[in-house]
Length: 249
Ligand SMILES: [Ca+2]
Ligand SMILES: [Ca+2]
Image 1: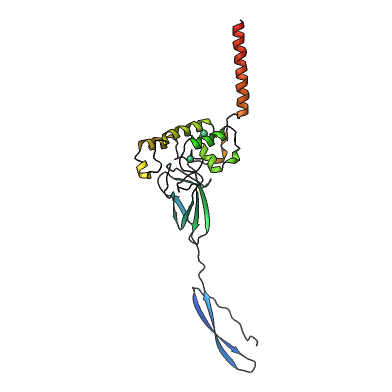
Image 2 (image 1 turned 180 degrees about the vertical axis):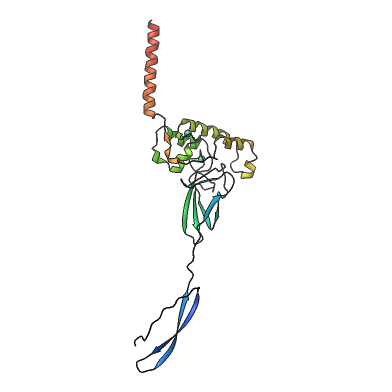
């Protein structure tokens, strides 16, 4: 068999097509055959749009962090158009705590973006800030653990007063909040909590509704424990000598 001619054609719309092809042999015989062709649309999947899920939520596109959440919140913190959000919680109670991942998928189920939740003051990721969190901040502020021991989101959450440094002021703020939290029923629904004056006072201690542009620029300014020990020892020695001189003269 050999080909007597060839042709090209194009189809402007999707669909199933049949083409009749006449085959002619060297002896003049011919035969018609049908060839089936399917033409598909080249589907264009829209890029999802991500917006705050409720009032106060800040979606920082630079750091890919989400802020502005009420303590203990368990609502969807983002609203997605042309896609969906999948939450990978940082705790078993499915609360929006520091470290919760919010993955954005397009309508083709492809991962297109990912954000991390930050609740200022919450280091262990349970969505609340109390003495446990203050302990972690204290370890970092006093040089007892390296910066790398915490994630970027956790270090951002350590700066409870948003002054750009992680120090014992942040520790005190979180400890103070923890005292109030002891009076709050953490299992109550958010609507009930928002009518609780102690809960509102608790939330008022650490501002969550701020814009952070450079969360990785925070540094500790506290002296290391070793330096503090040496300073304390010198101070005690100076006091002893001073007292001795005062008694002697
Ligand atoms: Ca916590
Ligand atoms: Ca601070």
